[in-house]
Image 1 (cartoon, rainbow, N blue to C red):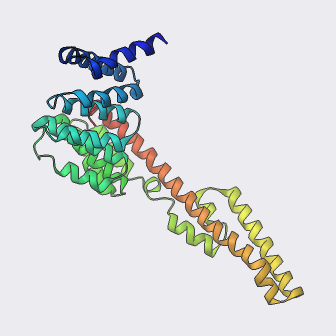
Image 2 (spheres, rainbow, N blue to C red):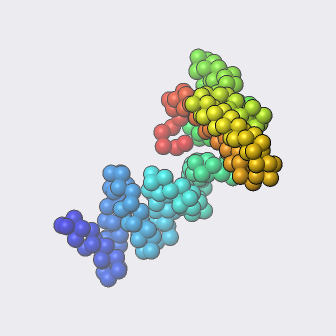
Amino acid sequence: MKNTILKLLLLIPLCFGNKQFMGQTLKQTIIFADSALQQNNAPLSIKLYTRILYFAPDSLKPKIFEKLAFAYYSENKFIEAEKYFKFASFSAKDSTLNDLLLKISATQILQKKFLLAQQTLYALPDSLPIYQQRTKNFQFGTLNFGIANFIEAEKYFLKVLPDSSSLEKEKIKSYFAKKKYLYRPNPNLVFYSSLFVPGSGQIITGDYQSSLNSIFLLGALSGLSVLTLVNYGLADAILTVFPWFFRYYQGGAIKAETKAKTKLQENRALIYHEITNLMIPYLPQGKH
């Protein structure tokens, strides 16, 4: 309760204090917001930075925009983070602008807006300090990995590493050589396999229990269709049994395809995790 009252007292002068007192309180509020962000209290820092923007002079706003973007970023609110990094970039120049462009592209990659991130990275100059160049190459590698352009992804990931890191480079090459993890299971193959031979798609994904269930269920429905046809005629078989057969026949193929997509993404995520572990020592912390 005491802390809450102190916070309110800290903010009230922003609205009602005189100019000199307002400036002093604004500085204190910025310190308080910075402290909240450093202590991982992003929700509080977001509220404070947003309030500060109403009273901060124009010269101070770019830095507040950037801090607000960091706060949203730490909350995994990448849409808002992207927006405020962009606001911060409008008046930035040279190396500061390049840093902000890298942060903007990072938020875009995390939103899976890969083509937009690519455009942002192309806005960077060709000649950059080593830490920015490595971050740029890492992000190019990541977005190409995200769109399954593994040839380009490998090329950019290798550029992150210095020439002396021959062992790490060989490991990265070996990861991209693992087609079992990058391209399999093939969701299209799984889907059509399930249509031609029910249960086969689940076998490809390693889901043997679902494969047995599908075979048993469709086999039972096929038998029921024959019995209905013999005893009651074609019309009854089509109207009563066939809709259920078709539902599980098609549904089994779709579920198998979905399972394959999930499995494929898990395999790729495993490879990407291994690659990033190799990259981390060569990337500036907090800049990628």
